[in-house]
Length: 118
Image 1 (cartoon, one colour):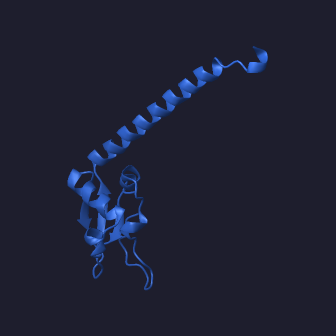
Image 2 (cartoon, rainbow, N blue to C red):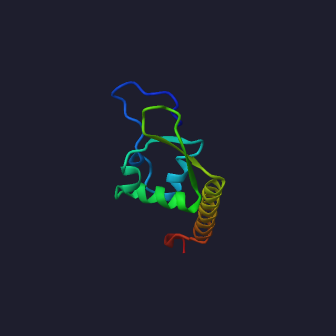
Image 3 (cartoon, rainbow, N blue to C red):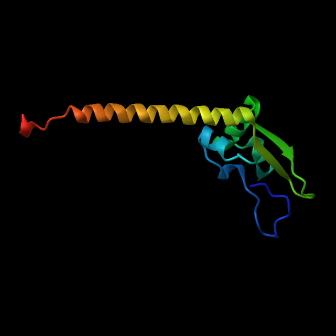
């Protein structure tokens, strides 16, 4: 979610480490944009999300813009068209795999004759 008004004192802005650690799920979390705390851990921490963030920026799957809230270190991160296509292709591939597995299972069970009926 994009945040464009300052949060009340004591509330934390979203941290990059709160996002999924799987690349496609990580990308999907930025559909429509997300505001994150732009602390030094955004690019220097040794977390899966930091590495995913760097890879997604370098690959063009994510893009960033400054956040309009003054006095806060925030960054708005957006999924690019290339990132959206990556997610779509992965979703299609996973669906094809599930359909294939279902067909194989149906064939196997259709040919199955219990030993008591042989």
